[in-house]
Image (cartoon, rainbow, N blue to C red; front, side, top):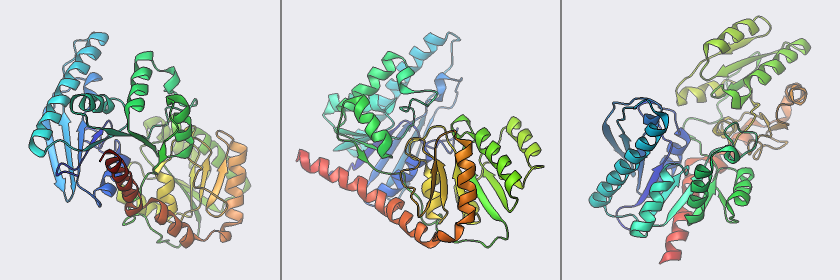
Amino acid sequence: MNEAGIIWLVSWYPNEKNPVAGDFIQRHAMAVSKFRKLTVIYMDQSGWKENSILDKTDTITIGNLTEIRCYLPFRKTGISMADLILYNLKYHFWYKRLLKKVFRENGKPDLIHVHVPMKAGKLALWAKRKWGIPFILSEQASTYLETAPDSFDKRNSYYRNSVKTIFKEAIAVTNVSKTVARLLEKKMGRDDLRVVHNTVDARLFFHNPALHQTFRFIHVSTMNEQKNIEGLLNTFTLLSTIRRDWELRLVGPVSAQLEQNLETLKKEFNLTWAGEIPYGQVALEMQQASAFVLFSNHENFPCVIAEALACGLPVITSDAGGAGECININNGKIVPVRNEEKLLQALNELMNNYHAYNRYQIAEEAACKFSYPVIGQQFSQLYDEILQRGA
């Protein structure tokens, strides 16, 4: 491979406006950088939704990983269709100019890796047609599931056709779950999708249990419709009528409306919430818990499940998307989506049989599946296969 290394074009990535956006992609990048030189390029996409005066490009290099974040200034006209067209023209012009600059300074890469097809995939198509640079595509979204509010099948034809073209032109495609990978194969007319799971920083998430007198369930999420917080809280309210030897800890952003509901519910059972906290603090919260619970309506492969397992927590999850793919009788339970009765049963059974779960073994198995060295090597091997194929 030449000195340019691998170039990643990412549609989502942590940035100045949203530090947690696409953080799972950044963790993938950290994992890959353990094996080879990598440059990640992110162009902020928020300008078409709101006036943006931020005009700068940040470049940070740590070891083998270089991150380039470009913020595109854009002033809206107030005409929605015109704003959308003008923004996309400016977005692609700036992105192409940035790519040319990176190629001039570092040389053209042998391979581009796109994370989330729109919009970064459009730039990979352009680079492929202009310079013959092949690209890999990784998709992490749950939008391809019918249960997702922004389901792919409900999007406009231009969007669907653009995504299908990007899938078709990619030399290889990966997904973080088998469930969504098989679904994508049907929708995109491919039969070669490879599964590479989300990764976990094992320096933070590991088995280090704290002793508690009270059994603690923990839930970590964005607390939105996707995570079915209403159904989760309904079920714990029912559990409180059966037994009181437990507590529930919520971690994630809490809206004013949700906080009002939580203030009411904490009168019914032992309920606390931490709000939105740094990534490392999430690990400490998990290490102080007894079990993790997720009751989502739709998912791909949630990072929080891998993180909980890495901390040795047995996991109860709904069977949304690929959420339950790594859960078995030794590390947790799977319940049907939106089925509060089955969730209640699972919560009660897990507490009654908690002695059967070997937390040390759960953590060890998770480390063997999701740690940076494991996931980084899987991507690195894929790169080698493609480059050797083209040699």
